Image: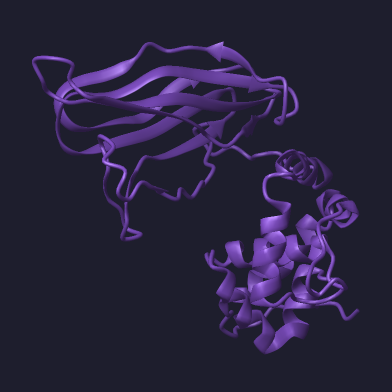
Length: 272
């Protein structure tokens, strides 16, 4: 297979240029090997293994494209995308990509989480701190689609459907900043966050324990509430994530309606 050569140039880079880095980093993980060993039901394009299916979808997501039909763009220059992502057998059709993910379902959730950690360990990744000692970590959030659910706190999202909740987390050297927000469609009697937990793990995939549980952050007579740079000091050398319950309660004299949903952030590593 041909290799991509990196040179200094003043030419304008196109959007897929960064996929070669995605392919190289994922190539250090054992996730694709595990996917190739996974057996699924009878499938179209059987010559394309599950590893190529995952690499194709990861490539699409890296470009901010989440629809199966977007894979047709890869077919316009298959050689480039195969080399960039390290795809061995071929880029699947839209039909095959959709059906194969239906077959895989949630059966590889743990392997994906393990592969994510393995990827960072293989690359010997350690966050580098800024001058203030903090390490920013960018996490993109997709709103939950709650169209037609009549849940409290549902409002229109930038994806043009009714949904709610976004969160982010950033890690620094021995400190964690939590950012979260909840927005309702109208003024609530109570709105905010309950059951906040900062969880700790030695490997980032299992053995999560509650390291710290801050008090509930709930306000009254408001339409929205946010946690902005909620600082928590933690020991280094561990992975951390936070879990909280999004909460909203309507006005009412008798049995006012309330709604809650529990969410968990991505894990981040805090250096020793």
